[in-house]
Amino acid sequence: MSLDEPESNVWNGLFWVIQLFICINAVAKSFLQENKGRMLYFYSISGPASFVLAKLLFNSLLMLVMSLLSLLLFTLFLGNPMHKAGSFIGLVLLGGWSLSLVFTFLAAIAAKAQQNAAIMAVLGFPIIIPQLLLLMQLSKAAFAPLLTIPASTVLLLVALDAMVVLLAVILFPFLWKD
Image 1: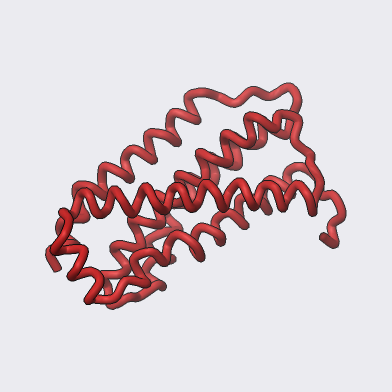
Image 2: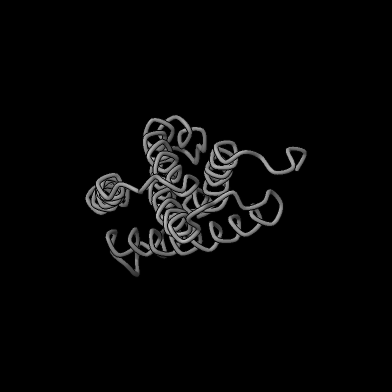
C-alpha cells in the first residue's frame, strides 16, 4: 500500500508472487495435515487414483476461490491497471488451477518423506518457476492495450497442467502403498 498505485509490471509480479505464497499456505498443506490414522481410513475406503483426483479437485476449487479473492483485494488496495480485465480473470483462474495441481502433487510426495515441508520447496521451485514465468508473460498482455494473449502459450500451460494430473494418477499409487 506504500506504493499507492504501482505500475502494471510491478502489480503483475506482486500478484503472482502472492498467489504462489497463497497456494503454498492453503493448498500444499493438504497432505501434510493428514495423520497416519486418517490415511489408513482413506486407504480402506478408496483407491489411490480416486483419492488423488479428489484431492486435486478439492484443492483446485479452493485455490480458484482464493485466487478470485486475492484479485479482488489487490484491485481494492492497489488499483486496477488492467486493460483487459476479463482476460486477466481467466488467466488468474488458470494460474490458480496450475499452482494448486503442482503443489497438491508435491504435498503428496512430501507427506511420505517424514512430513517434511522443506521437500516441497526443493522439488517445487524448479517445477513452478516455468509456470510462473508463463503466467507472468501471458498476463502482461492483459495490462497492455495492444498485445494479445497467444493461444499457443495458454495451450502450453494447459498441457503442463494435464501432465501434472497424469503424473499424479500414475505415480501416486506408489506412494499410496507405503
